[in-house]
Image 1 (cartoon, rainbow, N blue to C red):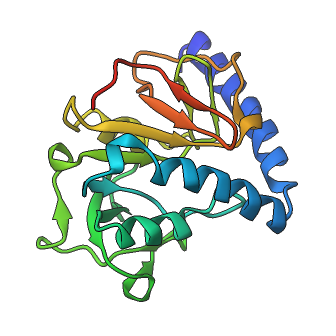
Image 2: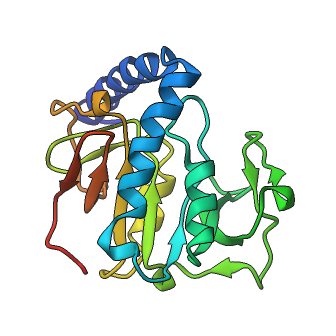
Length: 203
């Protein structure tokens, strides 16, 4: 690994760890209260006032509560899909249609996923909105993830009209986060107190 790239990865790992420690320190009551603020902002988003095909995810480890968000989106007639990680290829995942928590099974990382099938597979170019998990972000829309590259790879396959929306706590903003050519920036990020817009509106 070239020295500049190695140093870049070391810096990102340190930034990631610092933010994760802050997230881990939140109480369950704080998570739920802050999640409700974000949920309200998402459900009132102008792009979501008609049914959409949405790729979401299941929150864990102190993340903002997307399990409740997913349920509310389904109640508003949006179609949802969730990521399914490839069991054999590192950094590769697909999206599969999701209906209820009862149908999910744990993957190799013990993360619940839909059972993949050809019928449930959603091609990335059909997605209208991707709710993107993140560890940190900048005021320009750069995203710091967990380092696996799963989302950077699949976000390169979506339609230019698909909205890339991040959800974060306010403390997850860190303008010292760097980005490289392979890092895919987000269009918008919603926090408990802010709605950031980084690109020209797609709706």
